Image (cartoon, rainbow, N blue to C red; front, side, top):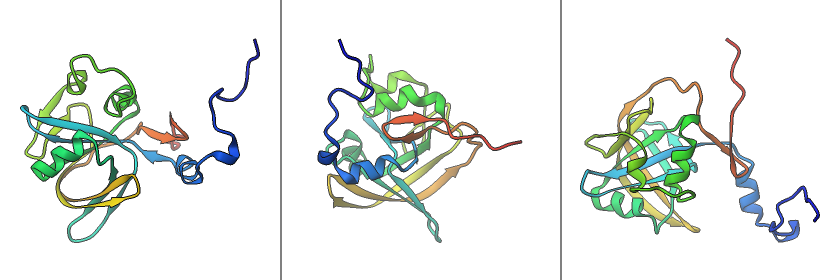
Length: 174
């Protein structure tokens, strides 16, 4: 048996998608987008986001067009964007569909229902948002939401994604 230093099923370098390779080298904050109420709710882990300042702040995200979240956002017109901490890495995997979720995604944590949708009890920063537009872009929907409400807390240990895994950023000296 031979032990290889690379993944045994990794595409040869010449065949790898340069867009995915470039995106993977960008550190990205991991957020959880949720929408709905106690009767019908959906969520999705999203790391492709931007925040645009202005008289009405906006959050722009790339959302899977086939996701339950996309359906719920379009049905309700409202949602929650929450910043995850490193302690939430398993929950991020649950909402990304990477690991099993016995009892469903929302059974894996404690939630509070807001007028915008479910808020994870253990997050310190989140935004209540209103859907403004959805445009098809590549294999994703470019979703723009207007920030209607924000709770801003300390993010001492944010969940960061880079090159297919979660990383701990260096902490600033105190």
